[in-house]
Image (tube, rainbow, N blue to C red):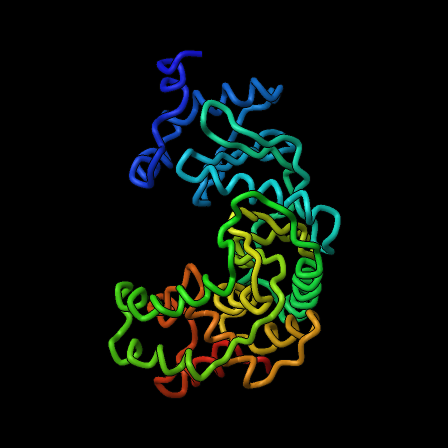
Length: 311
């Protein structure tokens, strides 16, 4: 196949600007999707999911996830971690049927999991249903962290300690750029200095355990998906997502989840979780201040007690 043919199948996506331009353009992506499906022997029509940072399609009883050249490194992580966790968690994860590259774009063909995104039903769930899900989620995260970390070439970050140091060094600047009030920005460095995170053995992390990445049906979690941002690091890093994007300050839910994981929460844990929230790769404290319950006072210690409440 000539270079000219390749360019007619896939649009250019060698940098973030190119990909942002065509990410939602199904007329541009369609020829490549159809050619890839044909090469995989997939005959069902592909239907694009409306959410997600990468193009993902339902194709019959399977899901096709695409990785443009600018994000091709994430393919190895998604495929490698899915292979490592499949069948090892109490909440199901997709089995991988095929993965590789097709004319410079990467792909993973995997099982289509039952259920709907938890985000679509969460507001309507009664307390007993949420309590049951808290237990299921805590047990699933514990099982994830017990899985042997797979060997994946060029998996970022290579050194967790260096990652944490870099995140801490740039934290105030990133939050300032996101619009955080200067009075809050001034508190970041002293708060992080006063919340020692220790040097725990790295475990396998999902990193984005939130309502959009959990599937639900009939009172149970039926799927945990989207492993391309998976990392190796401190277990507590994985507790940020459920607090910010699921519990929303619901201490009963969050406390049940942590105890199901095997942790008895205390104030020092809440302070560490607040620190991990600041250090998280996708941290956006100004957005969280709008989304989550307000603290009793304008301090990160107070935020820790409110956002990571466990009773």
